[in-house]
Length: 306
Image (spheres, rainbow, N blue to C red):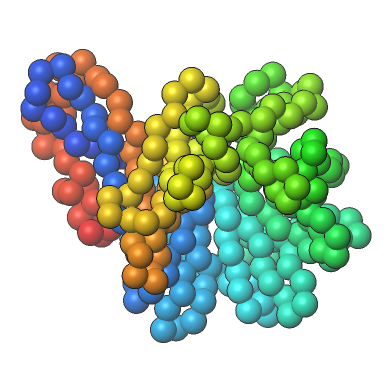
């Protein structure tokens, strides 16, 4: 999702070499007692996702200090997918169907595409929600502005999944996602011109975009050998994002220079992560930061992340 607010998750690593500023860094995030933690969305200092543990399966909200379960009343599985301000959106499973939801901390609301038995909500920005609906029949992407529903079908694809949205990009907002079953490819959709632009990974391999902010798109691509990697794409350059030692890395959301998602270390578990995109700042600024004693480990300890 996109946010005009400054990112509170500041992960600073000050390097001593002259002229070098911030460096990218990976930070694992695990819900207490969980064997599987999936991070799906972020806004400010808040992250949302899903965990599986001894106490059961729960959606969660984590503000850097406190973990709060997010469970739609009466559902057996709740997956918070994104957050904007105090509004959490996602999907919950009934016993026969799936429904989108929104939750403001007090009140729950269901988000269902009219007439569709299954609705999955993936992202929200400036009150605009994207996802997919279907079953029975193929999945279609959608855009919902709180009043109007718009169906999104990627050309040549029998299934369309709208995954991420940035209402500040382009002239009237853009959506990213992918088409599947019959024609797999990533795409960018311009809301104003109503046009799809295909997105392929480095060397023309399959790419699956999941989030967008400004010029930056994040997601996963599958290389020629079939291995899946996370990526950051700024419209020109592809950067592979592989959590160290993981066999699969899945970036899901981006806000400012912060990327969140989850990774699989190959032992049957799953862990959430935060990743700070590397940036270069003038050397004097780095010196000032070093003088203030700002470090990723110290900050994370104060926030009880590590």
